Image 1 (cartoon, rainbow, N blue to C red):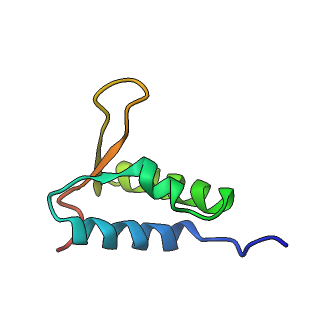
Image 2 (cartoon, helix red, strand yellow):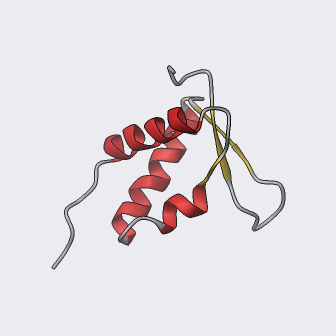
Amino acid sequence: VRAAAVKIEDMIQMLEEALRRAGPRAIDLNGLLEAQPDMDQRISLFLAVLELVKATRVKIEQTEAFASIALYRSDGIVP
């Protein structure tokens, strides 16, 4: 049985809400990806992150190769 497809727009909304709740604190992208129940949702989440970065609504930071990726609010997300 295949899970229902998750829209990238839905993941964008979920990410923006999580970033609002986090305030100035970082959200760990690896933790978000691991929390998704299947590969389709992980892919949708990753694409949502790319869309938010492209729109400058999210900042990302990785301190070194293979380290965790941190997501931060950008000024593009309304509190």
